Length: 442
Image 1 (cartoon, rainbow, N blue to C red):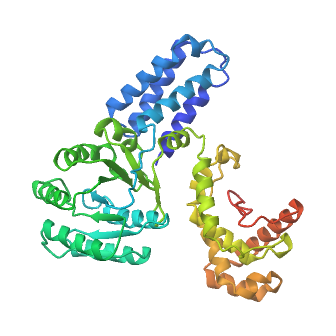
Image 2: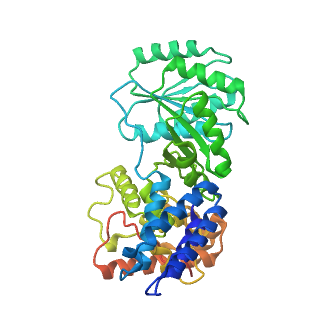
Image 3: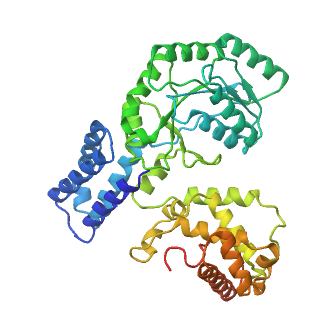
């Protein structure tokens, strides 16, 4: 989401390096460029103005300009202000032992239903017992969609009927909870293409009936800052305790995220990072600021890797050595890495990783998909005994994966290189999270 803005800010930061002493004029010129970058990223004009003013007040002081590293001080001030604008501290709602009812609101198409499924997945993985409530009384398709998601997550769902009264829904919910204990109820509500009185009245009545502990507004990050006045309307009529940004993995320029706290006064509590059920993360302003400035987000990467490791069975790869490393292991590693997110996303979390790639090279997600297709087209015996891959087998694998024989040959060569490298290192780490040779350039 912040890719374009991050590149601009990193370029501005780089222009300050190596100059030695900075003058007040240097700082003001750099901040003018920062302000332009923010406006181009669809950041609210008031936020852009306040941001650069705050950084300038900190950076123009003698402690900064007369220090031995004034460029680093200025960049530090930019980072601090980014954190401030994004909300500074994480504001994920705290859950009580029971009685947690979360009402999800938003316009039609914002991603409420998908977010409801992701929240259920997120908290089920933490040992909670979620219940999904499909409370859209106007669109049966929305209720059916949530039912599918509930099945994928493995949680129960309470579906309302067409035109069902809010008090009836509340009574049915109380009866369910009396019979089946659930410590988190996630209510997916109706939406409209635009705010109207009927929608607001319906949401207000439902909110009063079920008594939510949290009222979360889902905002489509792709719509930019124009979605923020909508948030103010929801807050005035129903009340909003926090924001969920959906579709942050798309081409959003980041304006909504950087403007949300200032314009609405409400914190961003979650961000949707992909379409997968596990593609939802608590929003952490400090980590987001570091990623914008190219400082990576190693903590999030470590947390994701630890979560994956916890999912693996204890004996899955116990005692394996570099000599045991097979194409099946290579396929398993690729699938584990995909669970962390796209390879580009993983690289963005590692400080300086993108700069380590050859100039003009990038991670080709399609190439990685081709590699997985090739490995999947092999038989299990071929993956565990690569020596079986003669010319006729490679031709069959290429045809089965929709690739060329040369692609199969290149993958096998990469595998051989990886195995040799692991032998030189003297160990094969279980679930090793390194990129396969050839990724990022050929």
